[in-house]
Image (cartoon, rainbow over all chains, first blue to last red; front, side):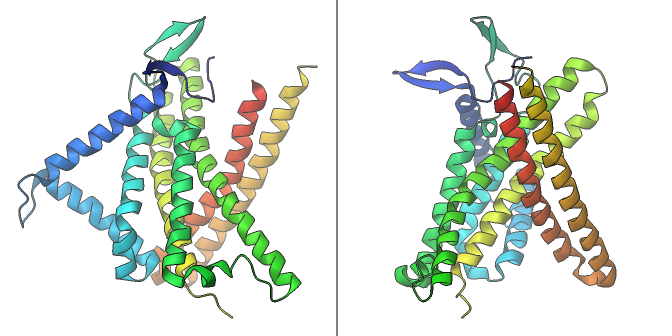
Length: 242
Length: 72
């Protein structure tokens, strides 16, 4: 059984190694851009077809995000970031379930290297998303409260206890990066390993409920990533209670 | 002794799985309870339950990823 935690390199461009997850991420980006183009060419006031479907998806997500933010202006400010995260993570998670992912590849030194692997099954991708999310949260807090007022949350010299609380807050910001990245990576990677093991044991019929589980987990993890980002932005931009 | 790593992996996953299952069970039990008391707030309670369950499940996923690395 050949499961490697790290993504495998398949070729290089001008000396930069390209792994199978990078290739899949390009395919996901191309798919999203192509469907966005299809949905927005010749837009009509009464939507039909592809435009209708995308309007429903974006309106549902907007409603959900607004119910967490509680404030429409803030939702409008952060919705592009949040919706991009959601759709890219969702498409990446679900693409790993298509036939051919993990099974079509080549042999290199007796280990099997698949050509395609879900983009979020690579710790690099999820780490990048987590860092973007946490850094945007800090920027949102600074924009809403001002640099020094926001900094007082972490460096609070009024009393020794508050100083340690501030230090813990700082450490917890870094812990959020680890937590975000490992949650997403672990779900998708463990899902891939589970599919390989189950399909290796009983290839017919039995993988079906596991595929259903994978679809559910993929959707749930995308939603959770987005909701947690929203919640942390909301916490960072509210005035601290004294 | 390379066989000990299997015991380590099993122990890690076992304890993490127990902790996660216990935590999520409590979260969902409280969610069901409070939805029974206040059915109108059902939507909000469901959203918070999903969020809470994902936070708890993340801990079990850390253990899973570490155990994959230990198995190498």
